[in-house]
Structures are given as structure tokens and as C-alpha cells.
Image 1 (cartoon, rainbow, N blue to C red):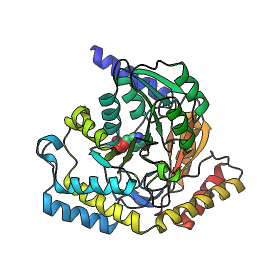
Image 2 (cartoon, protein in one colour):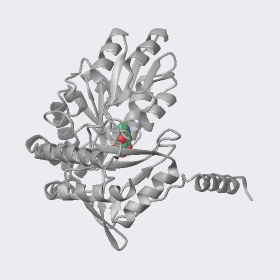
Image 3 (tube, rainbow, N blue to C red):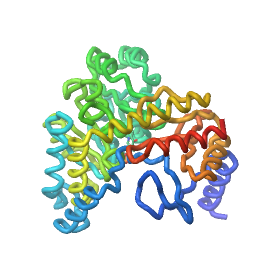
Image 4 (tube, helix red, strand yellow):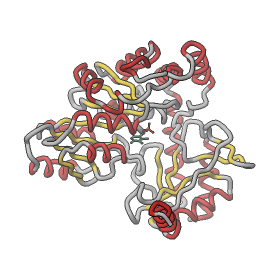
Length: 387
Ligand SMILES: *Cc1c(COP(=O)(O)O)cnc(C)c1O
């Protein structure tokens, strides 16, 4: 057997025997509260389409119109010939919406985080990250070549201790998730911004799960914490979650955006998003700004779920966001719960290491504005059988 074959067999066998083997289910329908998988219609509680915009008729129509106007592919990277008026208009709209000077589109959130951290940091610099940060922030920090430190989850004191003992040479960057993707809790952004400023460092927030959901206008966890461009000079958010489309953006000062265009390899060497995706996203932002009922409905569903789960004696994590995990510990128990819910027509994925730390496998339930109160009750019925 070749080295490669042996390696592949080893890796796959280890994953299978530890309950960590992953597979994909295949959807035959759009995103929504109900999805079609094989012969079954399932009530879905694991999508990040928090506002139910991924299949909104107006967003779909905007994408079709965008495709009619610009075609399907962007054809090149932004710096070559791939940057269209649709991209430019969306960048302006996103900067305006988040109260930042400028915004820059990336094709994926993973690429945006890699591009920012590896573009701005290098040897001689330092980066400080919450230990539960998304993989893309952690990888970006590691690949950057900067000194890399992890501080305790949501602990501004732990961050301050690290900042005090670290080198003051070079750039010092603190990077956190605004909403932690597997736990649903919020970063204490006000406190983190204060520590960061006091210790002469700069704060970057990845708001993939807060943008569109939190804040009075839906501008996310920085709006919720009332922090401007001075406090959070680097704001990143994705468009594939609450906005229902795809891609990501980074927002900040004129110089930040200019520098990223020069330095960010995932920006420079990657094909621009299809312009029609930008057209669709413009419509999503419009719906977000004009129709706050989705956020309010979602908030009511979160409340209903938490109260209901409490009545069943199910312990939830301290989350006020649509991410409502149930911590089960072992991968096997998580899979068993997920499979049992599936038999009742409820789709909830088990999240296992290495996505989450060892010993913290869980069900990750996500609620969306597309759900009804009856959907939540059905989920609670399913959980009641297991609890
Ligand atoms: C989803 C996610 C990303 C990656 O964004 P993509 O556009 O899906 O590549 C980055 N950070 C966080 C916190 C995320 O949840």
C-alpha cells in the first residue's frame, strides 16, 4: 500500500472509531424552516440563515436581475477586471450601514479573516485571540507569523494579563468573535475594547453571527455594544448567514481598506464574488434596514425556546442569540440525540471535536425568523422525549 493510501485509511478509521466521522446530507430544497432531504421533509434547526432571507423572493429576484445585468461569473479578481458597480455599490452600502468609513468585499469569511491577519501582521508583531475563536481567526493568527497568544474565553482580565506581559514591539492585535459560533454567547466587547485601548493594541471583531441579528438596526454586536470605528478599527462580518447570500466584508478606515487592497493575499489572488451576489445582498441589506420584524420575531422565538427548555429541565448555555446549544459532552451521546430527533423529522446537527474542544460535544440548535412558534413547540416535544 502506498504512503498516501495508508495515511487515508488511518485517518478515516480513527475518525470512525472515535465517533468523529463526518458526512454530508444532501438538500433537495432551498434553505427554510423546512428542508427536503431524500424522501423526507425535515424541520430544520441548524441553518445560519437567521432571518430567513436565503430564499426570500425579493432577494432571489435581485440575484436574477443582477445575473441578467452582469452575467454569472465575475471573471477575475477585484484588482484585475472583476470589480463591478454592483460590488462598489454594496461596499458603500455596507460601510454606511455599519457606520464605518469604508468596506471591502471578500469572497468568503474564512478568506477575509486570513487576509486581514496575514496581510497586516508578521514577524515581530503579536496577536491575542479568545481560545474559542472561529477556526479562520485562529488560522489567520497562526499563519501570520506573529507571536500568538490565546486568552481565556470572554475574560478581559486574562487578555489584559497577556497584553501586559507581551512584547510592546510591533503591532499588537486582539481578535475575537462578536458572537461565538458554537456557544452563542456574546463577547464582552465594551470591556475588551477598553483593555485593548489601555494596553495600546487594536481590536478586530468577527461578527459573522451578530451582523443582521443584533443591534437596533441589525448592524450587529458592535452596534449592540455601541462601539464605533475608533473602538473597533477592524470589523469583519459574513454575508452567507443572516444576509442569506454569500461572501464577507471588512469595514474600517480609509487607510485600513487601502492597505488590505495592497496586502491581503486572499483578496488579491482570488476571483471576485459574482456581481449578482452583490445585487442580491443589496436587497438583503434593504430588507434588514426596513423590516425590523424579523429580528423581533426571532427574539420572541429565542425566548419561547429558552423558557420551554427550562420547563423540561434541559440545561441551556448562557446565550441570547439564535445559537442555542445543548451541551452533552460525548460525541456518541450527541450523535444519538441528533439521530433520535431526525427520526421525528427534526434536523439538528451534532457538533463534535475538533470543531469544539474535547469533552464538549453538543447539539447546536439554531433558530431563524422563518420558524413559527409551533415549530419551536415541535422541537421542544422532540427534546422532551430525550431529556
Ligand atoms: C462562518 C464563519 C466564518 C467564515 O465565513 P464563510 O463566509 O462561511 O467562509 C468566519 N467566522 C465565523 C465566526 C463564522 O461563523
